[in-house]
Length: 283
Image (cartoon, rainbow, N blue to C red):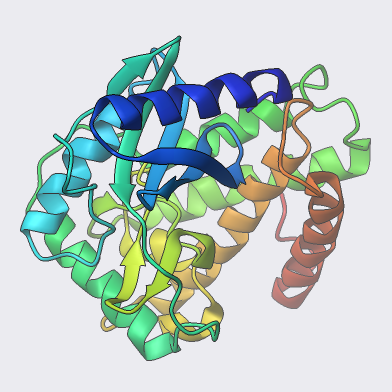
């Protein structure tokens, strides 16, 4: 979120919670990207704030409720207030349970895979309209194809990303296979380590596709513990996801801290992965 909007967004979250009879004296920024995540104190509530008109928060609330009812490992909405999206001062605010962090250690791969498998099982029972994962690939491709939007991307790097996205979109699409509702980005940053076990958050990137696309966001060891995985498809999805997130880091409007440094590192990782496959793979 733009720096000029952060203080207003924090005030909107605090006043929203206060109007719902929660005690709020302070707000701590936990995450700032296109949306703001705040810990409100002393009521100890997690607030997510977006500019008004962003339908993703409403979708997240509805989906989280349905997944929780199915017993999925997802973060819960704040039980002391009515569920929903609250509008204030040009912002939309949703209120969630704040979970004290559990062990600082990484989630064991088997536990990570088990939580994701349970999430996917619950998602298979839902029929909700979402984009296809290839729509997100196309968004990344258009970004790479636009020098105006990615002006700092060198020509050789642009060609590398464009060729990788084009080839993998084709080869993965030709595989066919089962598809379902997915989290979209179940990477470690979207998995809370809590006293209640691992819980997934942030469903704004939900899409339809093969489970291997979700697994491609998780640490490599996780895929070995998820049953029935097509390991070749997973390998291709890992490179595809790496190319997508690299493209986003070169967006002139990207606000991720150290995003450009990560974009450079990931370009090297893509080259290394393609070198392992053979010299003609990007075309």
